Length: 464
Image 1 (cartoon, one colour):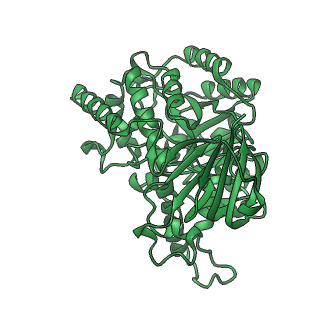
Image 2 (cartoon, rainbow, N blue to C red; image 1 turned 45 degrees about the vertical axis):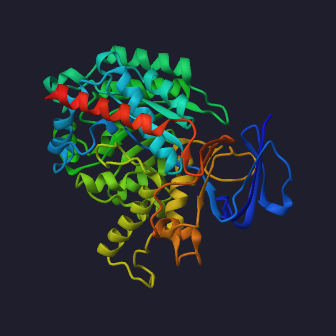
Image 3 (tube, rainbow, N blue to C red; image 1 turned 60 degrees about the vertical axis):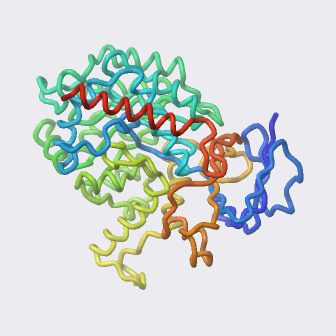
């Protein structure tokens, strides 16, 4: 049994039910689980590892609810820079078709390293194409080296262009194999217990890349084994038109017809959802992964996050794929979520005085809550999202003695988003220090950059 003592934080943000922020706070954990949280003087004085975080803000670890790790290999591809989602996909599918199992591992290490340095302790990744013998196992193996919690989603595409789908036939798979492999992964890896470092999710890619039969059968399999379901939904107007023309339903109604609503389902994006559909989300307990940077990058629109929160819909934060962001910085994504939410509020006639009846402006604390408690709810993780006894010892710390925060220390918590926070100084997952004094402890970052750039160049050159 190993113990960890964190003490003397300038402010410890608990995100507990009372949203306590404790000056001079700290916590004590044993074997990865928190036993005590409070003022430093009330905590044990000794532990196997002691971190004196005077001058730091301490927060629960951030939770990333939607990503595509493999896309770190295709950032800023010239032909995909200035197009919408469907054309962006058509440009990149042929490049992704050249990926190997080694590429999956390389990109996973890169994405998780960037996430760890930006405060993420738990990440959900959506891997939905498996060219040249690639498997989800390749991602799982690499993630184990980095040390973050992983919700590995077994994505899939079965509806190729020859059958009326968007992806080329070269990157789709048979539904028989998809379901067989999904079962194999659940039985081999899924850990539902508190403190789990790895969970499996079933995640057919989108309404325009899989059949209704695969969606139904995936839902039945997931519920048989108690795992969650995930897919893209209502990301663009093009998707809405596609669903109406091909299925006769708007995207959410199509999901309802396939038994794809419930507490165990979360959707990425959900930009084009109307007021009636928001209530469907709330009633059935569906979650949303909000990806503001990607939605702006691809000109998809602005998700109605304030309306979701008002209706009680579970909302988490996602950086989305690193070819549509093109970053894996989760703290930056929280800042972007706050700013984009204010743009939307302004377009809807928000009043700076928050007069009754006018949209209010999203606050820094609201976005930090979405990135912590919100993400935990979306992923169904009752053991994550806040710093309190019984929860996992997943936490981050940011040193306030930086140029970025000069003049902002009257509210250092809000300053984390109002000001620029490029990276965290500490990242601790289940009581294990992954980032210390801004340095990654589990990955040789310069070497990883070199390996990654070689792989990316090879992939693009092979695609012509």
